[in-house]
Amino acid sequence: MKEKLVSIVSLIVLVALGIIAFALTQLSTESSYRFLLALYPLVVVLFGVALLRQSGLTMSFVGLVLTIVLAVFPFETPIDVVFGASMVGFLKSFGISISVAATMLMIFLMKEVGALDTVSKVIKQQVVGDEVRALYVGIGFGSFLTSLGVVTPALFPPLLITMGFAPSSAVAIAVLGYDPTTSFSLLSIPITLPAEASFRLIGVAINPVAFAFKIALFLPLVSTGFAFAILWLTGGKQSMRKGAVPAVICGLALALACLGTVALDYFTGVEYVPLRIVGVIAGLCAMVSVYLYQKLSKTKTKQETANYPSRRDVWRAFSPWISLTVLAVVVSVPLVGNWLSNVLAGWEKIAVPGGETVDLNVLSQIYTWIFVAVLLSLLTLKPTRKQVKDAFIVWAKRFPGPFLAFVLYFCMAYVMSYSPMNVVLGKTLASVFGAGYIFVAASLGLFGAIVGGSETTSNVLFMKIQKTASDSVGLGEAGFMTVYGSHAVAGGIASAVTPAKINNAVATIDAEKGTESLIMRKHLIVAVLLTIGTGILTGVLVNIGI
Image (cartoon, rainbow, N blue to C red):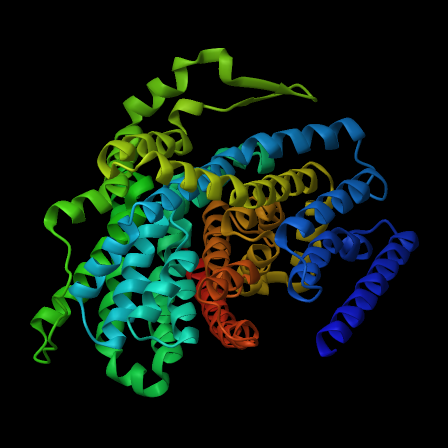
């Protein structure tokens, strides 16, 4: 009854906001009067997912339709421009939408052949103790797997339950652990995809390495903060005290690995470490740091050795990720990547209404090589025909939802960008906050990722808003990049409170009713505090010229 009342009240509020927004636009054509109407599609999506209990896919349809209607009528965007923007968004989404579909196929195949069980046994053998295991699995292994495209909220909870963690702790570790390196997830698509779209969206080409460097500047604060958050949600203040040293070591190892690798490329101008594997390296460094800490610690705990897999089984279980990492490194070599981009020449170029042409670059896209890694894993995992069939059936049922959601949110982002809507939002925010905008800019990343379901969508959706606002308050290119970097970081923080991810994690362990709501409230505290910290650090970095 209470949930139904919340939904009814939320719906009434949404309708009222819509009426007020439309009425304000009739009073004046000034940006401040049109701000609420430009923001309305995003508010509708947020209310729909968080309060009306609708799926992200459902709200992506609603959000796109509403955005198109508003862009064409109140904001007077030509229909052919809107249609062209939708087509560009559809094609540009392939970088993440197809990649997600490909990685889901890999995971379902690994699960069918028992590879994930073997991986779980290996992890349990490496470290002991709830605090250390939580950091090793959540921060280290979580970052490593997420960088390769694995959905850890769906993978980790059952594993953590078998290790003896409470359901709420298992969900917290699975959902919070990888958040600091969300920007480097899925072989760094949240960075490279917005960079590829930047010239069309804001008229300036963003260097992905420079973008990554700005993001990495925030990670010492954010990754260490998440490490302590995991300890707090695992065992309260006692766990925070007990695991303080490994939390600092793990958090800083992850952050400095990211910062060190991208700084090397940024300051030398040479991509010595491919951006696609920065997150993989950082996750490994965090795991190694926790492992070495426990080995060197005076406190020893007997490790479990029963049923430990053979070395051959271990290599077999990890083979898909090993293959994917090697392929990602090879494709990231500029000479190889450029050659692959030109192999198909004009065959992969698609003309869209408005005279724009989108080059898909299929052979240099990581989703192609994820599928190749899946094919190679057939040789190493050696699944039976039944296992392949079962994995494919599960994949066919589950991948369309996430695929379509990403596609539709990208279409929504491009329609807003091609219309005056984003300009209205950016200018109004800048005029309201003035020079203080730099301290609140990161909050848009949190909001955008919750609404759009991912940091990648948020980075694309809000790019023009951040650029317009930054220009309006007088920030130069360096200042905008710092602000945009904080936006991306906050988008990663938002993974802690993204309803779809928490629901995914809770569903895998069939937790009791009310668990999801309880976890959301606790995670929201973490997300808000870290976003505030990110905003303060943004102001400091901009003011000292970094």
